[in-house]
Image (tube, rainbow, N blue to C red; front, side):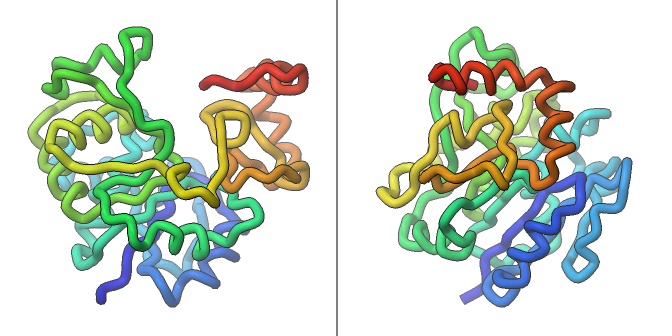
Length: 257
């Protein structure tokens, strides 16, 4: 059986993921999709594919100045173009943190679940969501959304939705485009919390509420975004004003983003 792909989409070095890769390299084809416009991300021991104008143009995909942030699903298509013999791609961002469970153990929990996408917070969107406005461009009756820091995608879904990306020249982001076209193509999905041993919520795994790895002590399984250096953590709190989310959490107000 062909190995599955483990794909890290990153614009920063990560000692945490370099250490995890040492334990995972015998079980997965590891690919690093790197945005190196500002710095070299490292990972010289692994296959590294640049996420830049040239690589994306070669796939006949639309480009934009913010595509490394906006189009996370492009990492799937870049990886698929490099290795096409696999069942699933596990796609992860560098600020995902596994708590009290090793990534290999986490991945193995879903080995018997045969769906095209496993993700978190998959749902219909409403008109208040900014990306809902791309509904006509992505040619769907309903706009769906899915959180993108960590997911598992089947080869069938990657190929099918890549074809849609080539056909629809839209700036719709990864969360809206991939989820909506998945449903439109009658593909299947599940969420990580369907497994009874995996626990998370938007106070642990969310878009904006940051975590410092040395302060993580709770029982949740996955965290995002996580910083392993305190300076990066404090910069996030200040520059992105995520301190507001932290204050709410301190006073027992649940995060909703």
